[in-house]
Image 1: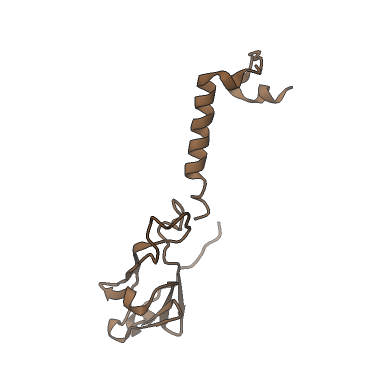
Image 2 (image 1 turned 90 degrees about the horizontal axis):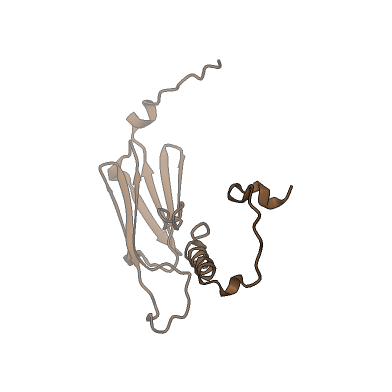
Amino acid sequence: MAIRDLIPFYRGRDIAVRRDDDHNPFLTLHREMNRLFDDVFRGFDAMPGDRLGDRTMGWPNIEVSEAAGEITVTAELPGLGEKDVDVQLAGGVLVIAGEKKSEAQDKDRLFTERCYGRFERRIPLEGIDESKASAVFKNGLLTVKLPRTEAAMTNVKRIAINAK
C-alpha cells in the first residue's frame, strides 16, 4: 500500500506526477497561497494572547496568588514606569491599564517582536477589602496586595466529593 492510498482523495486514482508542475499556473498559485497562509499564521502559537491563544488576552503577564487572607496580583511590565500604569479596583474587578510607547519611529524600524500600545487587564475578585488595597511598582514589576474581608474568609463552603 502506497502512502497516497491513505489520502482519501487519491484512493482509486492513478495520478502521474509531472515534472512540469512548476509551469502550471494553478499549481503555482496554490503553492503561493499555501505559503502566504503559512507566513501569516506562523507566529500565533508562540507569541500574547497569544496571539489567538493565551497571549492575546495575556499582556501583561500576571500571577495571582492567595496566602494568609490576602490576594497578591503581580504583573510584569518591562520598560514601563509607574506613571505609565493605572491600577483601579471597583465593583470587585481589579483593572491594570496603561500604555507602552515606542522609542523608535516606524520608519527606522526594520523588525520588532516587542509589543507597543495600550493594554488593559481585568481580574474579577470577590471578598476584597477595597479600603486596604495597596500597590508597589519596582523594576518593571507591579505587585498589588488585596486583603480579603473576614466574611469572605469564613463563608467558604466545602463540597464533598463522592466516588461512584
